[in-house]
Image 1 (spheres, rainbow, N blue to C red):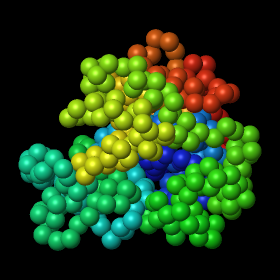
Image 2 (spheres, rainbow, N blue to C red; image 1 turned 135 degrees about the vertical axis):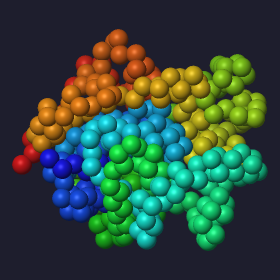
Image 3 (cartoon, rainbow, N blue to C red; image 1 turned 30 degrees about the horizontal axis):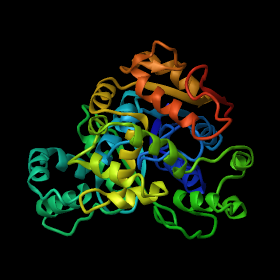
Length: 387
């Protein structure tokens, strides 16, 4: 069976995602769609609006055949770690192609990836040389303008991730086919609805403002029940827990948190008593060096008490955590499971050491609202009957 891989967050699932799945099948002639999805905390460092099991079920009802969790150490990380972790999983799952959304369909991503690998030493050297007050996208824009001698920008999130996928794919012994699909009608963070399409950012904003009639226009009909029956989680839900962590931790404990740099722990301690929301806290720390996304991820690392050691250890051993599958996905697993190099987890046991960091994240997520069911122990893959 021909397979296409998707790298997703579905935060939340919407009509643009449905379009992406259909286009991925059409452009690759794939019989099986495999999606690697962020868990309960997403790449920009916030809790997902629906838990990972609900988001997996939404996708399985709309054309995905096998849902795999992207481990926390890759999911809540900068674009290069996010891309590398996801691409490695899709490669181990024997995908033949990766289909991803982009804001720039003119770029030959396959060639770009090869060029990036060719110039890796130069890129690494320039990243160190460029001023520290520049953030990562700004540094990469300068470097690629130097290499290509032309205008180049890493400013749009989709494009930045797409280039990360291209580089990670080019490093594989057997690179997959790259299939970019132009975003449909709305931009990544666009807040306006156009016809029956809206960005995930816009939908979260609609949900926060209880504009559910608007949401109904931009999501598949078969997932509307989740909005009626679920407790929605917004980024501000972590603020009181985060405030407790910062107030109760010593400066040394905060300094040991992953990505805590240049005395940020002192500024955190100083500011936490004067701000009244997560957004206020992040804005009080933001600078040219530290983007909103960087600081948002740092807040999650503090919340979950994640150290450099935790991230390094987790990245040493990738694993395949199965969230769910269709009939086709189950058949694919049965045929190929013994060919995978990474450990396959279909049920989390208390001895699963490689899942420790994700277990911490799942446990914290459960504290964000009453009634969130167990996210780890006792959970088995969701099964959706497919045609």
